[in-house]
Length: 138
Image 1 (cartoon, rainbow, N blue to C red):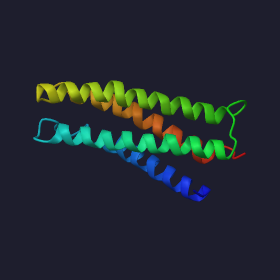
Image 2: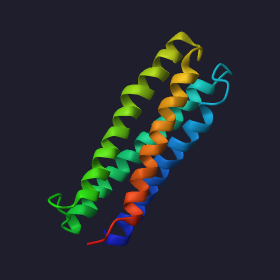
Image 3: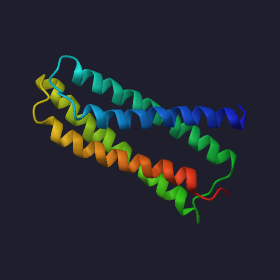
Image 4: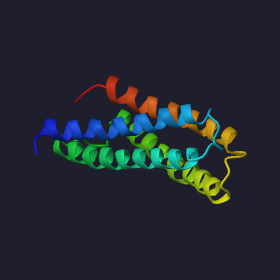
């Protein structure tokens, strides 16, 4: 596959992640007890996870192709750590909160937690995108 194709697929994956993160923030302010709302939010988060998987796999391929090393490449290391942190939040925090709410069939008590973690996720993903755009290309 050509370099431009890998980068295009990478950006598609990143776009799914960014969309899921920002949409989660918007949804977290809505009434989560409406029918189908919790399942819709879970589906949205799963789409974001798929996008993250695509972005990570293609990112690794692009990094190997361009021989990007971690030694001395602090912006890349920080970006990877932020992506890992957001992945943990997505799976361990959002996943558990949503699964518990779905098991109870109620979003009661979920909104405040969801809003806080959604803001954390938005800040992390915005930082990742900013680092990607503004870092020095080597």
